[in-house]
Each structure stands twice: as structure tokens, then as C-alpha cells.
Image 1: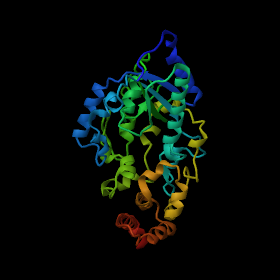
Image 2 (image 1 turned 60 degrees about the vertical axis):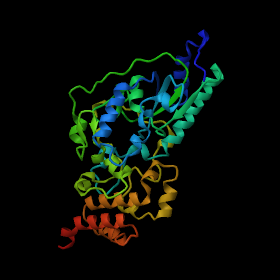
Image 3 (image 1 turned 45 degrees about the vertical axis):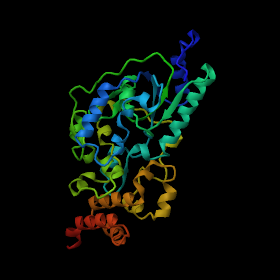
Image 4 (image 1 turned 90 degrees about the vertical axis):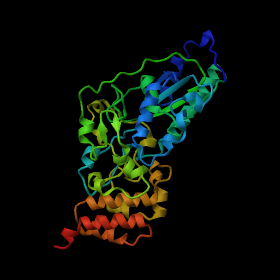
Length: 358
């Protein structure tokens, strides 16, 4: 790998940032690879069991917190962010109160961000090589053991808030992150400083009280974990709190005061597809596997799987207002081949039992 920069390349960091903006990234920052404090926090978090079933968080040892162990000769990380919040007719906050409709985390409404951002980062790498010569690098977008938020904070893109998401003073938190590990000894940016102050809005609003202390998230209680990462049954104690959230949760972002500065995305790939931004629960629950596969092609929703999709919808239907439509939809799935789906459908029907017995 090339670890030298000529005097003529002293302005390369500035050019990289300009190229990044041309490629659709709202901000580009550069940091070193020292993550000692973040490594200690991660190890304490894992030791406390807060990762739940996410075994991959510990699988790679310290390669997650030591970039040069993951990609040899790495000395810098180019961190980028890209806005993803679409401009919608019905606000996400209002949708949470429409209990017969489905709420899906806003980052998954359009096409899968992984491929889009990887392609843009690859184009950025190609631009650097074309202008400065060959260099060592590797592109990441939530695709390997990378501590993306601590790196982004060190690169000046924002600070890690009390809800553990990254917040930017000028842009809120509705953005995605990506990284380019490199051997180029680029000039560093200044880290972002914390501006949460005494605010506890995210802690107070969390439906399942997953933010157990400022800056500490117990994933086992988090709706995003429960509806996406968890493979088995959703604990009964959290089912009512899930409400109509069928894939992920945005509550901690919806209440964050800094998101008054959020800017809607201009990326067409992030615009909602198949009316997923405002669909009835019974409509989505009626999708058979072939239809689900077709309508989630190229979507991050695929991560939950079809059975997970039905499981989540059954819980949301159990929380929906009782109606003939809701009960009929649930009964149609009562004998589903999956034990997991059947158990959640049975629970949902039980929630409507009092009304049904009248």
C-alpha cells in the first residue's frame, strides 16, 4: 500500500470532500484509527449482554475497533454521511397514531442503502486514484466489523447522542454512514463535540425503555432489534409497546430537538416504494411469500425474512383497533405452517377476545 503523499497532494483532503459532495454525500470527514475509548465501551456493552442474539458483534474480536487489523496498513478513515428521510404526505409521527396502519423505519422505505452508498464510495475511491495515483483502500457500508459511529464522530460528522445514534448540529440524525479505509496519511478533521446537554427526550419516549442510561442502549429491549435481528418469539412484555411498528423504530429520532434541522433526501432510491410509507396492516399481512419477495427486492426489509415479517405484523394487528377486518385477517393465518407465526397470531387474536365475545 502507498503511504506517501507528495507536496502537490496537500490539498487532497479538500478535493476528496468536494468530490464526495458531488457524488451525493452531504458531508465527508477524515479521522485516524485510534478507537481506544470506543473499544472499551464496546467490550463493556458486550460483557453486559446488551447485544442479545447479535453474536456477530463479538465474532471478530478487536478487528471492529482496530481498523488496521481488519484492513492492514490502514492509517485513515474517510467517513461520509447521506440523508435518507423522504418528504411524505403523512408525517412519521402522525403515522404512529394511525394504529390500523403500518410503521416502517424510514431508512427502509426505498431501495437498500448498502448498494447505493457502496457504489458512490467506490466512485469516490476511483476519483482519488485517477487524480492522485493508486492507493490502498476498502469500502464499507454496514458490511463488516466497523465502529462507524465512533469513527464518524472523530471525523467531525456529528456526536453520538444519548440514544446512541449520530447527531449533526446542522442536519439532525436522519442520515446513513459509510467508510473508506485507506493508507493515505490525510490531514485529520476535528472531532465533533456533544450537544445533547440535559435533554432526555429520547430516553423518555422510548416505548420499551431500551435506553437504560444516557448513551447506553440495551438492544434486547429495542424495537429495531426485536423486529429485525431477533429470530425467535418477541417477548410478550414488549408486544403492546411495539404498537404498529413492524420493521424498526424511529421514535428516538422523531422526538430529538436537533431534527428540526433535518433535510429531506434528494435521492430517488430513498423514496418509498409499494406504498410502504402508508399501508394498512391487513394489506401487508395478506402478502403471500411470492408477493413479499417481489415487493421487497432490493430492500433492507429482506433482513427480517418473510416469517419475521408475518410475526411482526401479527403483533401490530394485535395492537390495532378491533374490527372484523383485523380479526378475519388474523384468522386466515391461524394455521400458518410456521410455529412462530401461529403463536403470534394466537396472541393477537387473544387481544381482541373481549370485543369478540361481546
